[in-house]
Amino acid sequence: MTQGYRYAPPLAMYGALIALLGLVLFVLTSVLALPMRLVGLDSHALLQPVVWAAGAPVVGGIVLILIDVAFLSRLRRGDSGLMDDPILDPRITVALTAYNDEESIGDSVLDFLGHPLVTRVLVVDNNSSDRTRAVAESAGASVVTEVRQGYGYCAFRALTEGSRHEDTEIVALCEGDMTFRSADLDKLVAYIAHGDVVNGTRIVEQLRSPQTQLTTFMYWGNFAGAKLLELKNLGRGTISDLGTTYKLCRSDYLRMNLSRFNPRVNLEFNAHFLDVVLRGNDRLIEAPITFYPRVGESKGGNVSNARAAKVGLRMLAGMVLGWSILTIGKND
Image 1 (tube, one colour):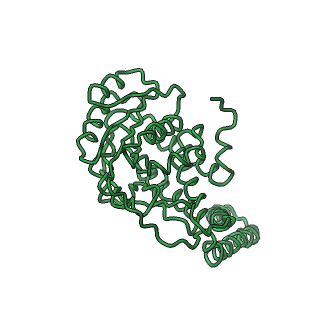
Image 2 (image 1 turned 90 degrees about the horizontal axis):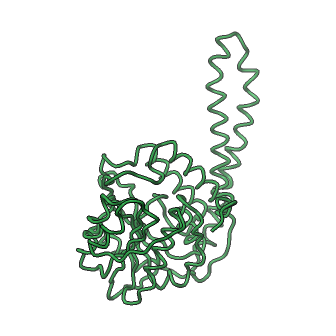
Image 3 (image 1 turned 45 degrees about the horizontal axis):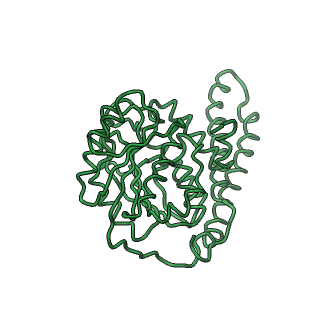
């Protein structure tokens, strides 16, 4: 945790949500004005109070954001300065999450094993019903099975297993579906001296294949959610991609902090992970990565825009109300 850190309420996040509520109310009244006039109703007299009411949350939200920017963000930032702690031997243990990834897991394992910095590849199989385990082992990976179903359990197990290896100082968390490649390890490692976690971001258009399952709706939803998380933790880090599953973590950081993360958070785990890192004022850095088309069928939040919207709303609930709200009724 950064020295000099003090807690400050996330007024910028609340302000943004309040202002957005006012803008939505204003737009709805504007849309209603035309049909009301067409049927002979006095839209001005009926809607003017609503327009005035919409202005109050917009102004109030902007005030909250300005207060946060001017005063509270300084408290969150702390006073320890830049982190510059290079890893002299940046050997990597790669931990891949997998669920029914028979079509892709072999190529993914071989790709990462071929990188000169990679010591080993672990595959965490989340109860696959196909030949994921056999294909991964044939390609040279060590495979463990996570019997608790869900991405949160699988990712948490991957981070746990990866950090146990003391001959490597870095754990790379990724999926075994070929959407991410080993070549981007060089980009992520370039920033590890300045962070505990280096998170990949898919926000750069020139690095994103047009054939991926990340639709325009999902792309902008991820960006908007990331900026809301940044506002929640204003002063602690810059975030542009809320849902990316490719990241580097210092092994010693994971060993000391894994207990802070909740594996019962499912498809929203990556957003939860970033929020916990930022709230602890640990060092989180973003680096642009290349995003390729998926090999095989998606089982996560990118199945459809409808499912992505549901996951996004759950992320919003976790950010605003606390991540434990997503685990109500879940039993390990």
